[in-house]
Image (spheres, rainbow, N blue to C red):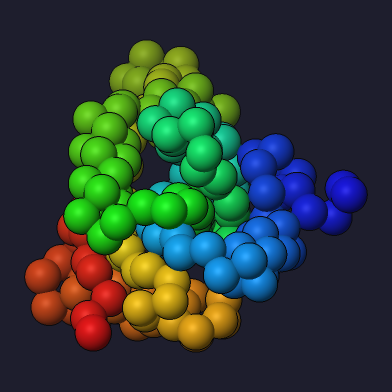
Length: 176
């Protein structure tokens, strides 16, 4: 179904994620999720334009896909948000995976040829470099949510709380 894939990145979208999570819940299979939010993405879009933002999303999707274990799936859940579904994964392993993603992205310099906004002193367009970071949040089914919606809400709230308290470029864990 074409409506289950994100047109920009080619990965599963929120509809596909909901179906996968629902299937796992119906099968009573435990799983972990790692919610990934690009730090300062709105600033990047405002500064460099939405076309460059789309390029960044595509580059980060590829980078995350390269880090996935065989059984894991990646989804784009919103504008600058991704989610990794990790079947039969304990909390400690999900946290380690989230940190590995966070570090891989922080070490990856994205290059964007500029057609506007910034020019070298000689008037030629120049390439910008951007060092993206992400904040992650980890949750487990059924420990942190009894359905896909409550689990998604729990990881979102954990990330917001952790970011407010400790800043960006961190991995948060749902409490409880």
